Length: 355
Ligand code: KG4
Ligand code: ZN
Image 1 (cartoon, rainbow, N blue to C red):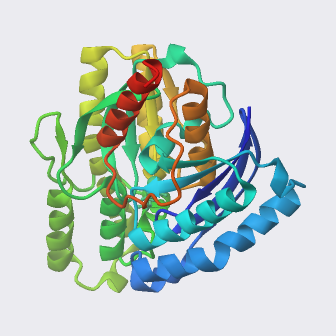
Image 2: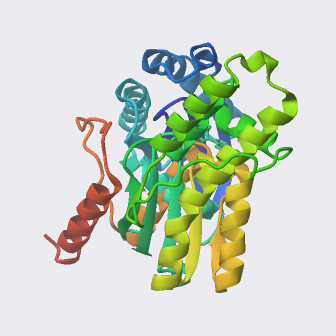
């Protein structure tokens, strides 16, 4: 298997990784602290931070793994979706390297990277399909039915906020630092999830929505706890636990529905919010109840990272369905997973027919 160097820069995490087959030779990852004081990601700051740290990280990775530039056989990078400026920084680095090392370049869909993030160090096993996989991050929330690594369809997606964005916005209202998801998760472990009842969207199983929860939390706080600094610690814990319970219940309802109706061979959970302790345990419990395997990446591969981008490129190479990029192709800030699957399937057909 070729040695793949992967670069991730779609949002506010810079990361580089070296992967050969299922051996992760090394990875560097760095979250950006610049956004904390703004309570959310500032796109221009994200681009500048990637610009400052990606090449330094890359040099560190090469040195720490004793890899020579001439050992690299493929460059993979996140082509989209994500912030345009941030993607451009990673794309420029990837293209410069591909050109100077004279190796192929593969533009990876970030959402496909999340989908395969559990399989970085595993042999991709076709026996896991069909798989019902929930991707939950700061920018995306969708439930995908996967027939293979390269074919699938979306069963349920959000109409408004993503799950991670909901955690972050609720946490911000509670006066917690950005990104609020992990902090809210930690505080929730000491609270009572039944202390508050938040609205559940009545949307069936084809759509998620989190805007009702966000508005209810806003009105509740304005009415009952306008001055958060006076809020007792236990009350903050109860708010976190009940908000977390609501988000997880909303996420799991369609998962349970489709898992019972369509009987997948396995369940998957990926994306930054896959680090959430309650969501992980609910997914594992469902798998146990239905007798199917559950694939959840370790915590370090839940948030954005280059190992999953390398894993996605590796799967494309193994499946023989690759679109080697011309250097002039642009990043794709909006690149829906379904468009990606469609492109892969037409590429697959044309490669099989030899055209
Ligand atoms: O996948 P990711 O690193 O970046 C995007 O592609 O968006 O996901 C980041 C999101 C943030 O919203 C963060 O608050 C959330 O994942 N997150 C969590 C937890 N850890 C990270 N949300 C809930 N509980 C956690 N433990
Ligand atoms: Zn992501």
